View 1 (tube, rainbow, N blue to C red):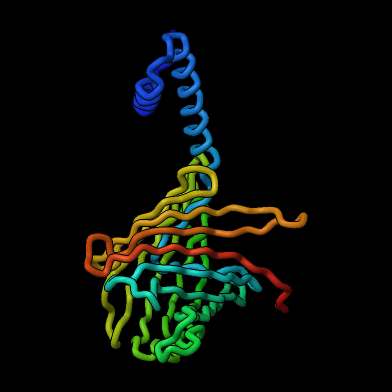
View 2: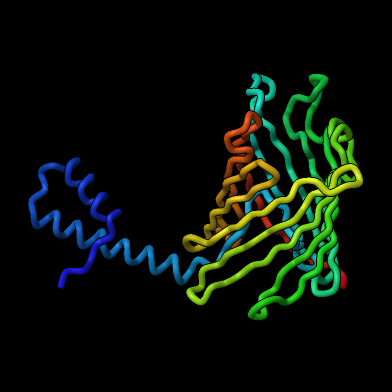
Length: 274
């Protein structure tokens, strides 16, 4: 009995057939079988191996393990348009964590907001704007013995340059990962910002693994929608594996301040006394 073929496979076969135009019936039959098998493999792989998920552009309730660190580069489009001297907004972050999250852990992120070659006064722009962000987090067990993280954070705790014009913004965030029986991973982050001695916008984001080492997410902060995707992968250089994460997304979807964002992050580890 002939297996039922997914509509996407039929469409793909039809498009290829129309392009090729010279393929005979047996070739089309072989193509259909190949595409059906490919669809099954992708579907089964996404069910069994989609064990990575993250939420793009939404605060997290977790920090890394003791002695862990990361380095991240970001490039984003400018809402008011690019200029020759400032084609895009570029920044870098160096973060590290101390303490055990089961008890209490501290995360520190040093943000170099400006890494553009040309600064505000037409001098060297690298590092002329920046800030220090802090986060205190604790993990605990929830349903099915899976761990969730609760964090209190403060952005722009210490600042210099143009970053001094930005207000300090606190937040509380809860992040709960979940792995389904199929192996597919999900992540939920919810919380609220704190501005000027009072709570303000709520935020919520959910990420889901779709295939091995890749996840997609959607987040809402106030009335601002962020859509994104993340890929976690490893490359081998001189017999040493290097893990990195690539993220890309759009914040402020449909608003005047809509921005396209690209990030590249690399986790780091070193020996740190307990």
